[in-house]
Image 1 (cartoon, rainbow, N blue to C red):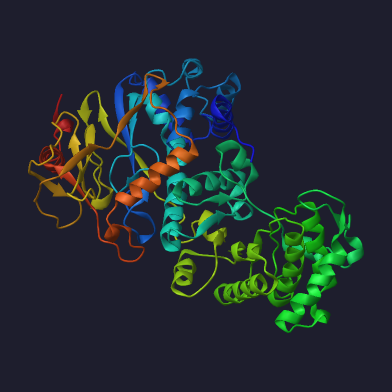
Image 2 (image 1 turned 135 degrees about the horizontal axis):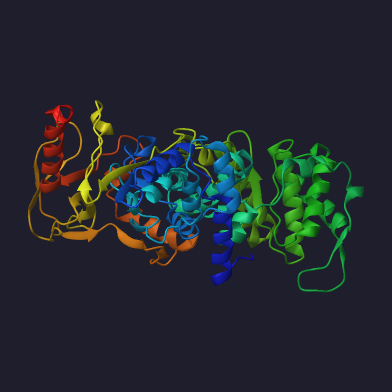
Length: 553
């Protein structure tokens, strides 16, 4: 498998981000607000926003944070071209001051800084994933693009993690959703982040090149049905793996087909010549990678053709890979296929048949994967497409980007819906662990507060309705966020897909099983420090008293 390495991979990734996420990929009202800030002379005021989501996706107990690398590359390359500015001049109201467009031409993220949770980390609702600080107009302009980069990436990564949990650790998972994804970018993003979430393979060749993800794939039903006669097989000979004279593969396979049919009590007349021709032709092309789909007509007939061709390949010292099942009762069919493989191995003394794999693909969902695990089956690899990449159970994570501080003063959004109120002020976020190393609670504090200490009791206020003051003593404490972007420069090493995948799997392993349940997981506690809770209460009470500014001179 060819992949980009080192600086080449970084350059390819950066080009991908620059091309997919230019600064104009945002909502128009970001520019109208930026202009209003500029017009009022407030555009340079220091401001802080934070990005978070309100509910764990899919009714689950956790999420995985993804998209950080793309966010950092987007910020590093943020600037408007002359063409961008001229377009904005044409769509903003005619009353817009011409000097504003000169301001946009000089704009970049050199005064922007970001702290973030590392990519691939297990995260929970209401915990700030990104904190973005800088000039008010600039950090406002970043909102939509950052949300776009984090929302789907984190959602599909979390979906993949759930599929992995449903499949268990033994079974390999292959993402094959490109043709069903929401456009080319959706397909590429899905391949990358489902790998980070726990999938092993992708069918997406470009994702393999850009992100170093192992790629796989052999044939579709169309290949099988395109053949009708053995005369279409060319060449009809194959050189043995160890070298020597070419062997008439068609003749060899015919001989094996008779022996297989005799062993299984089947009639050779049931075999479709076109299907056998397709398998033969593919075996000649890829004798070391022979893995056909065997249900283009019927599994029983496809299996006869496979065994005949695979046995011939083994005789020539090649190692066939296995078969793919794409319809019907995959569990039942896999058991029958494995039984036939074992019969052939024993009858013909071909131990290679013991290691043949069975791939199952048939509109697999999280639920059907979990049910498959409850039944007896012999499926080694599961291919998943539509339900994985389109996140059919929940189409959006619902991340939001909210203002929390301006000019050093905390800001808070109030709402009649308590769930939509925000938490004011710059913050630090800590994960408190129990004696077994499992996350116990995420604690959100004001940034000026001292960090909690292991073995020292603290009191806090869990988020959620009717949650009262709680006392907890952590066995360990870790800080969740790191400085990743400072004054326009990436200050945290960008992680490739494999490194982020490793972090995700380690992070998930630390999570207590009752938080990883796919159905009815235990709620994970996210809490506020006493000082932050007090600030929220003070601002809320102050807001309820109203203001007499209309009466002032």
